Length: 77
Image 1: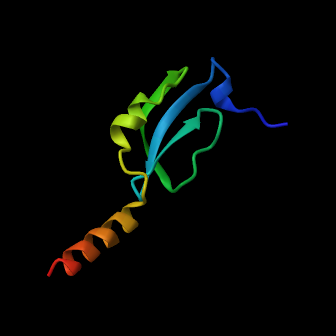
Image 2: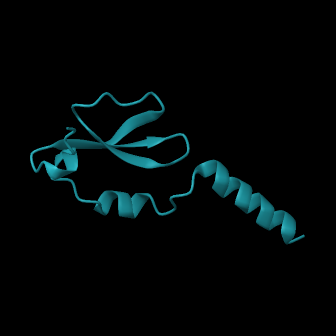
């Protein structure tokens, strides 16, 4: 059975971002994948989603956002 770190009030989490500008919370006991970089906020316990709500305002990957913006510019000509 796996343990969900979000259910553990004593779990310590860190927020990371990947190249597609997507945010993720990682428990400190898990190795962070190489595609995720730089702890944006580390060592907080009893994590609340406020940080992600403020910073991750568009859940679409960066590449998709850029393609949509290019399409809008092209369609507007």
